[in-house]
Image (cartoon, rainbow, N blue to C red; front, side, top):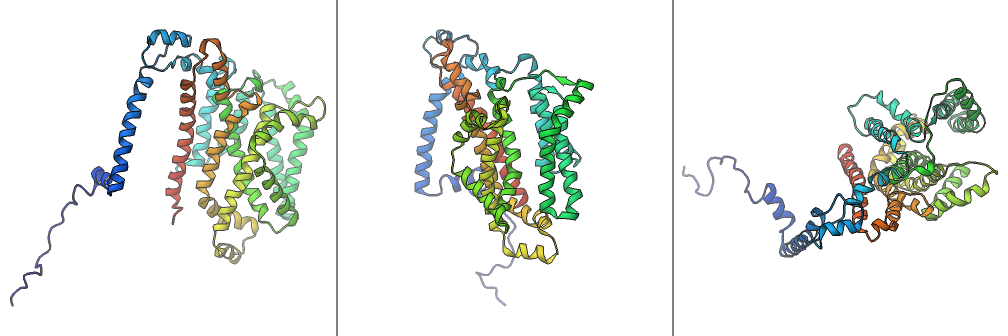
Length: 427
């Protein structure tokens, strides 16, 4: 039987794809030169990038690092183009630590290193779960390292949480989860307001274990932004979860309080809350009350971020199919177990981009504290510019500050993308 000429009688061997369709060349062809319009835009952007880099390169890399003033930088440059990076070298300690005592820099440095140890088991799998105990203890360790004073202050503060937890566990079988939670919170507040101070003073008199105290007004620079940002991030997420659940609650009082709080906070600028925390809050406190300024700002920043976090998480809860709630009911789970095991993990997974976006915005908003006379990096930049030796310097300071904030914000966004891929939020 004669073979048909256009029918292949044997298979061809596999061949490599064309070099123009794979690898870097394939990516360039697909993303930069996929059509005549994209090709024109790519060429125009490349020209603009070359012009910008050629203009900025000498300014960046021909800079002066050792000088005591802007005029000395100009004398060294002798009319050439170059940045006066000497201001960063000269005022680096202030930009990082503010007025924190020089001989105590080891304490914020140690707190910063321990921060990574504390968040590692929370952010990444594969680490021993026992490290979570250190993650829970880290906020109290960091407070003691940064502010100093007797160690018993943070110990009795930690005991407040322990008392509230055991009160909740003891009362839950009798009164139910909601009333047990309320009484547990009340037990914690009573301990902190009336008993913690005398107990801490008594223990300090018996065992005087203390670090050199540092006033909050000496905090500044990046250390202040990190302190406010980390506190706001850690505190706003659980509080936002509670508010989101409260807004969807069937209990009228709980829902009304949650909605009222969220809408009020979201309707007021953060700078207004900071001014209230800085100046007006003392008006409503008893005479002679010493309410730490940074603690006041921490509370306002946390509450502000929690209101936005609640709406992000509520969006994740609303995106869940109704069948997930029905499945939890079919398994016989009560409200809290259903939220903990089925509903909330999925809602948080859906809300990852919004949560991280809120965290990034919160960290950048810490720069607003310069308006209420707390010297963060931007506050010190203005103070340095007012100094006669560095008067007239602008770009070097703000480029450095922008680079520092970009490192932290870019890292958070990269971790968000890693977590989305790991949890497959798109499927």
